[in-house]
Image (cartoon, rainbow, N blue to C red; front, side):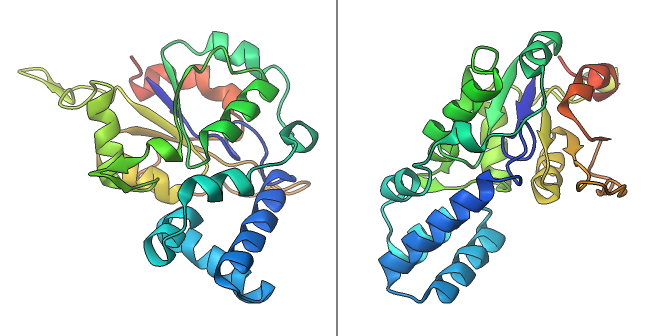
Length: 232
């Protein structure tokens, strides 16, 4: 089973999408907490770094309404800012096995992006940040508790080995651009794939440690990895 991240994995969010989101998040924090723009931007970034999602810091420390935050910070024309490789709909058909979205982005935004890149029919099971709760608390990636819960929810937990036959290959594969997410996923039993697009005109080495099972520059390379990752 393929667990697919969204931003900077299935599409190039760094091109323009993240700038639009960050601008709206900073403005929201500025209004909500009555901060100067520079202070609000620094706090937004600090919460993202610490918790994996700005939302979590705002909810935990300031009692912000999460639904209002997600609605206001992702209320823009996705199609006008979207940049993605061509032929992703064909990838969805070529990539054998169940495909599940696992993103720290909100569900409405994720659905609009999937429609824009042509994967809305191939990826119908979607776990967005609203679904990432453990014991009633938000736990977005890289939460290990949430990732374990995903394995249980998808009936993939407890299948890492067969009696008398040694270890089995991992059945769940997380495809993500974030090394911290992959490190956590590897620790709880996922196989992992790092997606790392080089900067325009650059030729950089793909990052990652022993927790990265494979490194690719494009999700179009995924069908060729199925055998070595133990996909089922």
